[in-house]
Image (cartoon, rainbow over all chains, first blue to last red; front, side, top):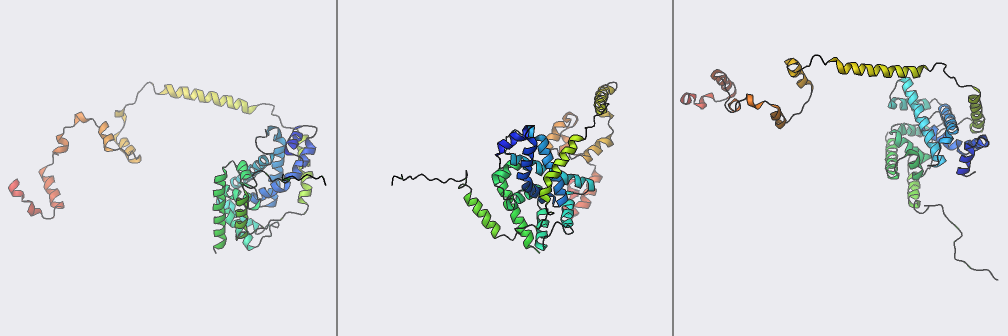
Length: 180
Length: 173
């Protein structure tokens, strides 16, 4: 893997840009896809948002000053794109956040790209009950195995706050799964 | 054998590895004992990631070839200027409008004042009320010796005092 700084330099140069972009996509496509998929749940939506994310990174790479890691910057763009997408959908349908979350989980039952069993479906219902930020933190820590320091840079939240939110989210989800 | 023995450890660890070791271990143990499923059940179409690069490249190429639409008349710019002028004119008119006839407290109808007090929770303390009351128009006796008519007083006592006879009113007339 090319060092991050070199990759950024190559992305900013017209001569090396397209080759570097291919490298960037190869390096991050899977991680970013799963991050987005956990927010929007549906594959086609995740694909749209992932493409928008990469296009945005490509167009705005000159604005990347290296104050954070390239990885954190891309994660931040992906998170914002995914959340904006959900907001647009909610506005289009004229429903509240809670109603839209319920609808997203209901749609999973008929989704050909979801093959979860009863407990996995219940997990999604549990995650849907969490506040937006807690949901992001839970997914990033539990399923994406990111370090608190990395999440802190992406979400611009203190490590202490993240730890508290994560443990609270785990307790809520465990409680939801045990209740029946 | 001329090999030199050295105590220097040739291995290294990532920065901060030992600082976060306990926390990582605790998180892992929490995960292993948790009822939360390790897999979420999401699936993707086969070869999805293989095709992504070519689809992205095609989209970028398409954006390059499609020329940007440039408005011949910068309509929005004119709209903004017109809106600014209208706002300034409106404000200037608004400031000068009421200069001819000044409104005073006496112009307000009592019913409007009462409605205002009913609709707004003013939450004034007794000190605050005392500050605004025009004290010079009241006598101290207005509060200490209320001027009640005898009939009203008797009616009140009759309604509210249980043993009316015990008051011995005759002796104190």
